[in-house]
Length: 239
Image (tube, rainbow, N blue to C red; front, side, top):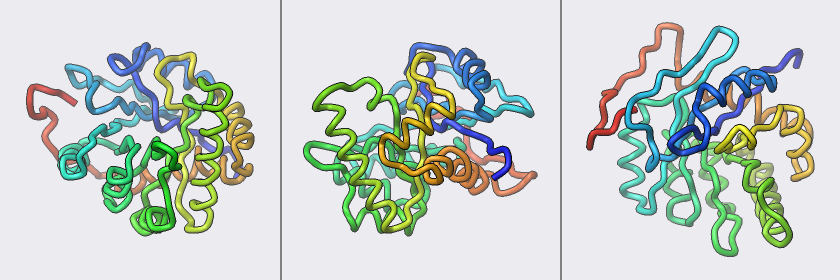
């Protein structure tokens, strides 16, 4: 790979995070990224549809991280937002939500699958992820903000999921999950942290370059592509 383009596919801006998307964009570009995804949680969307400050050299993709504890309602949210975003992420954390996300080919990424004393994945779910081309998100912020037993548990869960992803050839996405500019890391720092977490250099590089590019290519089928959908959403929300 000559000069890879690096992407951070999960950052949270106000009102979900502490900084504006403009501030996150300026710093991400300075750190060496070619693009980021604004992926506010679905329960913390801005009141008006934000203009994303993209240029030819740097692009901000429109995304969302769906938060829902009911699988049926989650499928409804997926249908509601799929045509409105470039990157659709599900915030996992229970067996039923993880299963609903990984069995739905309209989902791009499952973040935070772990719950209770489980890493969140098993052989059945990993196989579903591979069959439906749903990437498993590896997020750095929880690891960076944890200490002691909590960090050990996060590393154990991550490595268990990594073993399953390798066995079933599940795509991986490495992102900051930043809620402020202080959570952002340069691509080289992120790659080094990923290797500490158990990824090899090739896996970490793919998780920040080729896998994000494949997601965008899949969701933007061609140069004449126009995203369908109603931009003014229900219940007064804008997106």
